[in-house]
Length: 92
Image (cartoon, rainbow, N blue to C red; front, side, top):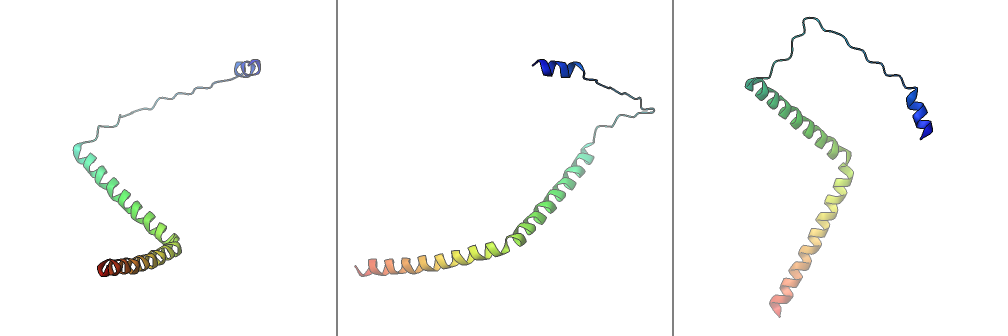
């Protein structure tokens, strides 16, 4: 604690300030400008989402193909098992 106290005792803080001439504060956005910004942001987000989705699918194409093939095989196996179970239940 003494070490930290000694370190903070030697700290120098520098603050600088300047005046801007002819400063005009920003105006509050109107409803029209807010709607325009919302529309632009929506388009930007949609575009980004679609681009990221495309990058994901291209980057994982091989994995997705393997999973799709596995799911198709599992579906065909389950379908044949289900048919056999229905046939055996119908004959009993």
